[in-house]
Length: 172
Image 1 (cartoon, rainbow, N blue to C red):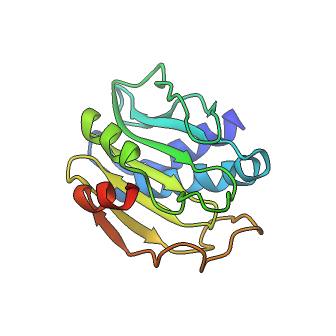
Image 2 (cartoon, rainbow, N blue to C red; image 1 turned 90 degrees about the vertical axis):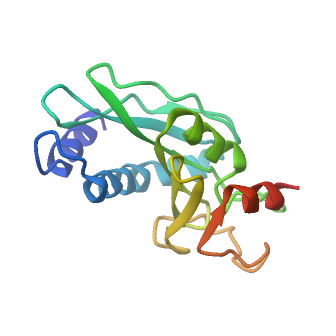
């Protein structure tokens, strides 16, 4: 898998030194797609970081295995700067609101000035935009591998975006 991640990172980059949010998003989506089945099967979060090296290429840090609700991110050794994080939300858990990024997800990205990408048990793909203090649904249920135990109607209707305040209110 490390070779695949490096290969994806090299193909995702399309210009020296330029910010490439589309390529970054596609890289994160591919990484999450590859981690999702194991995350669901084990009911554990998996996470990592995306950086840019001295030559302007995307580099991916080691993938970490977390708990059902937490994961420790590790920096890519060759990164000159970190541009994003990515993580799964594990497997489906009845009554647990893991189809939307948490306020903790957003606060972490805000504190570091990063973007983050989240895959949910229902197969949703989210952008956690720390600098803009909001989360945005990039693609809906089943756009990534999903947990067959997931039932879309169990939780509140899920909107396409949430502000920081709306996530605080949702977590109460």
